[in-house]
Length: 346
Image: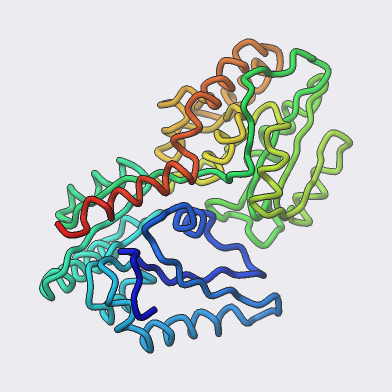
């Protein structure tokens, strides 16, 4: 655009075929100060790679137009060197490596040596403290992950009917030994399938609902009448049914030291959460929206306890409902706007 009243701009690719980050587009879409230049992919296979290459060509071709804005939200660090304006780096899944730190420091030095401002947005205080303690100079703001706006749970009541107890677990892939993602730090569900479910599957009225692509090996182990495989679903489809469940599971033991978006989806739907104690799951304990445990035996014991103690479950659900607004994309988009609003003209 030759002229624009908005101070911020971002270039974003939204795939129609493959899963994309559930964070960035909903956050930008709920701002009032960021212009989104959106490129949508094709439903045909293998074309996303070409679209991503086109994105970088688009940025190079229109770098002067992007540079007219006061703040540019990075596509990635290498291509940001083309943009001559203030820049905001958005990080939700840091690797915590020296290579990453050096790349960020090089980026902010380049931006500032050209007379512009550099800012960083992260999702947790843990990330902010890590970068600050490692001499990253940019101003750092924390904006949490958010939940889909179609989640509309508003009531804190839970069913007192002990005849059913519905567990839910969401993951793009749900695999175990013999499946393509066996051993993967996020997509291997062996702990859930082989250690946890085998010990609780006999409980009265218990059901296990799996949302995601279940591997063949995992599927063979889960051929039981009280296991329901919903397959891969979009965020909107998931959020439309999520509030129907009694307890959400986060049975991963690997700690990425991130803020998993699915935990916020659970919270937004008003579903109490059971997880292992990790940096990833710290929010559950901080907000008292569920339980974190140290080992598998405690995980199993808590499922048994919560299946019977609906009063305690209702307390956790009430906390989810009362604290959910600050994790809505509407609220988080306003927080992002404040970063721009406080910076423009300063």
